[in-house]
Length: 361
Image (cartoon, rainbow, N blue to C red; front, side, top):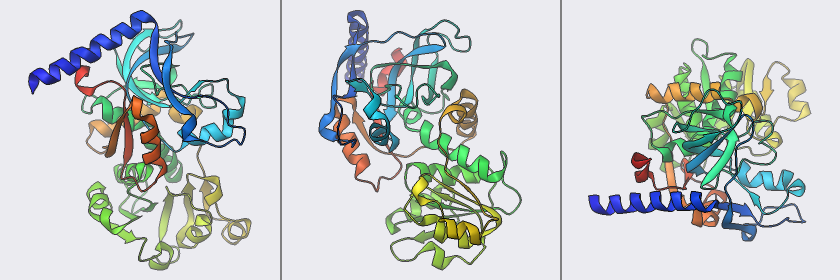
């Protein structure tokens, strides 16, 4: 078995260096424009493209892992009309720095890095991290914690940074106040399972979440104190009016804010991942004391200082990622299919380079 792993590692290493010498790489792309402005799986393909070169303030990363986030297909619908094609996809990245552009001072060749490539320049176009090599802004990259694998590091950035942004805003700082109660809607999903752990790490004293019966043990292990099976009960029927300080909505169904506002304490907060889930005007007029936020994790949200904060939670053992399924780059369509189907426990990971070969880099 050891010889088999060594053979796999050597083959990956040889393949990567061969591709680098040839100046090409494998990358997942949208092949051409959709005139109905929708995401179509049949337009996703993996092809040979030139390895990009880093510009000023940019870093070329040899990508080991990434993952599928909902925004990775929604961005096609939102901004795809303005792209040139074929167009590379992917935001999250974990890998090794291969070269650095002019003006880079923090990172050096050989650093093992991770991050969410959504600087203001990258967010509308994607950084193309579903590829063997990707050029990303140095500003978004942090040094990967040694305690987690490349596969785990590639699966975590966007969901962790979104949770950090959301809960830091709700807490009014890095820690919740005394006896804070936080409700995480959709606690078994990618963003939700990060939210439970981050709320706990930030000092929330009582964490409630919703999930199906099959995931109750999972969310309790993450730190949930109370679990509501959404198949059997509505959280807004179970919880008392004005009993929760913060609702972190990781599902995003339309009308969620209208239900959530009633259970939020005076001057509490409602945070949701989608604009459509925000409270109606009439609800906001009835509860003007409730603060509401729908974060877009771009720009400062994904800066290296933020991913370094996430890294500190990881190092302290307060934050882990659960990987539901792993797909290779050539199976990118299957990975999207799995993500789009919903009901994933944790994350759908994308393994670009065999994880075992990390020790040989």
